[in-house]
Each structure stands twice: as C-alpha cells, then as structure tokens.
Image (cartoon, rainbow, N blue to C red; front, side):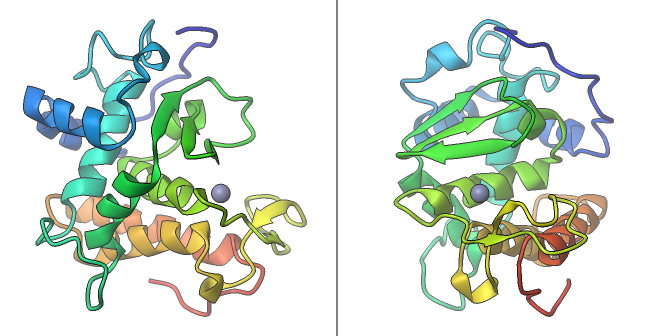
Amino acid sequence: MATCSSPPIPDKNASGDNQYGQDICRQDMIDYFWTTYGFNGNKAYWENGWGWHDPCNTDLPLARTFNGCYALTYSAQDYLNDAWDAPQNILQWGRRFVRESIDDLRAKCGDGTADASESGGTVELYLGYFYNEAVPERASTLCHEARHVGGKPHNAKFPSGSVYGAGKNGADSDWDYQGAWTYDAGFTAWYGVEGARTTSALKTLGRQIANKILNNAFATHPGFNV
Ligand SMILES: [Zn+2]
C-alpha cells in the first residue's frame, strides 16, 4: 500500500468477507457504492494497493469497504424504504443517513489509535477499519462517523473497565444523547436481530458487537443488551 502494509488478514468466513464478497462483485453494485457513499472524487485515496484496480479482491481495503456498504444498504428486509419516521429503525434509514452525511470517504493508514475519523464531512478509514472490523461493524462504523458530521462529538470519558480505555475521551454520556455510539450500537443491534441477506453467524456477531459498544462506550450504561 501507499505508506503502510496490510496486517495478516483475519478469517474471511468469520468476518463475513467471503459471504458479502460474492454480492459486491458486480459493476452496477460497485458504481452504486462509489457514487453514493463519498468515494467519488477520491480515487487517489483508493489507488496504489488500496484496491481501486482490483475492486472484488476482499483482501484489499476497497472491496472490504464495499462489503460494509452492502451490509449498510441491503440489511433491512424492505431496504428500499429508508424513511425516517418510526416504526422505521436505523437498519432501514442508516443507508440514507450515511448517503446524505458523508461527502468524502478516504482510505488511509492511520496511526493505530482509531479505526476511522470524521472532519468537515470527510471520513477517513484506517487499517483497523479494514482488518479489525467484521463486515457488520464496517457498516455501523459508517453510521457512527456520519453521526459526527455537522457537529455531534463524543461528550464523555469511557467508563471504568472499558475496552476502549477507561478514563479516556471518546465515549458518549448516555444512550439518549443519540450520539455516534448510539447509532453504532443501534445498527449492529438491529442487524443482529432483524438483518436480512446475511447469515445467522453474522447476526450473532452483530449482537456481540452491539453489546461490546453498549457495555463499553457509554459513561452511563444504557441498561440493556441484545
Ligand atoms: Zn466517534
């Protein structure tokens, strides 16, 4: 890659990359993701080893991001209905929220401290996003970063025992703050319960990811798991 190399690639059955990799490898699909989720205009960030010349290769960041885009786009049973109003949930409107929030989506190495970041509508994805996150979490991370767009920062420190680093900044105060972690956990929870076009193993993983966030990313625990 440009200035960093990929780590050993985790089991692609467990991560969902083999499953979703079959679905993304179509030109119409690739074109849709490219023009919908902020890749457009950012080709330079996806060339030179990041996957632009090999967009179906799920060893590479671009196809792995497309897998996340597929999970974001098609995991609601009735995915074409992305209206905001209840009883709709983030599994349905998450795709629209990301589509309307993220202007530019770029691949970078990162410094290992975060999987992704957002500034001024531009979202950067780092090695941890591509290789430490399973496909459902890649979808929910896009919801997370989209929530930061327009000014919704983290507003609390991680609680004691948090896997994200107790006492460090980056948590949300509580569920009702409706911050990036609420969106992140909300997507993976709904995916884990009602996800379509996925597998039972990946839905179980989705619930595990949701619970990891619920148990570690809020200063005041939301009070439930899924
Ligand atoms: Zn964040």
